[in-house]
Image (cartoon, rainbow, N blue to C red; front, top):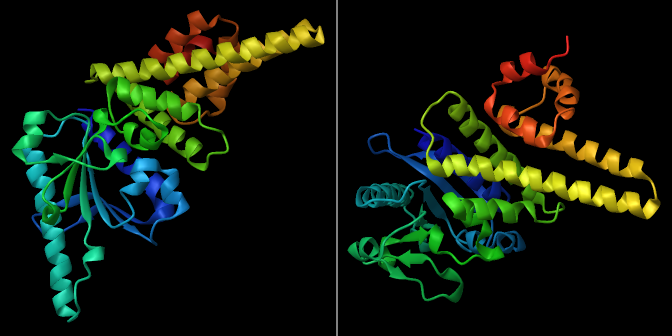
Length: 316
């Protein structure tokens, strides 16, 4: 099962985004049969510019929140389980308030956000989940206000910059599109590189499972292919820039150097995605790999194991 890999990615991803805004607790233990809340978030202050930078996700974190992200569409049991965890946690807060003989401030009571890729109208109706009336909350469905629960249907979110950070938790084409948008963000965006690193780690884990012929669904296979295609496109762009520079300066060596650098960067990126880092042995086979065309070496880089690549390209 790859669900565990995606669950870990979702928790790490949300933690990376939300940590600058407040306190994040992953797999928060609650005193009920060993249950755990996927992610508990407590804001450090009220609405800030940092919240706004996260668009719709930032809006969901103005107040304390429980996040329960799902890779696969939720079922009725999933919803009930999430709500049980919410109610047990609320009960703990109430008991703590009584022990300390203080009034329980409603502002510290968390809202439960259940993140699911899809949900049918009939399914939502079964929980009397009604669509938000807010213009910027298309795809969010609220249960009764006292239940403090909402279902975020990620694939129903509009494709806008404000929803990017939530759409990255979708699957299939929705997630692939979000990753492409992430790559186009300005490099000075402080979240861009950290999130790209997490995405690469996700792809690396999925690729390892693929190489071991373990279960990998179609969405995961397409995700790996999408990232590879993005690297090919990036290399093509660098090549074109190098050609333009070479023509402008009247030096063909500019073209050759640009293509060489693009090829090296692409190989290094694939190594980073698949193996997490580039050690001395991998560094030593980059030059031999560069002697092949991208059409020839890309399949090898994706299909061969680390040791097979070293054995295949080691010039010793």
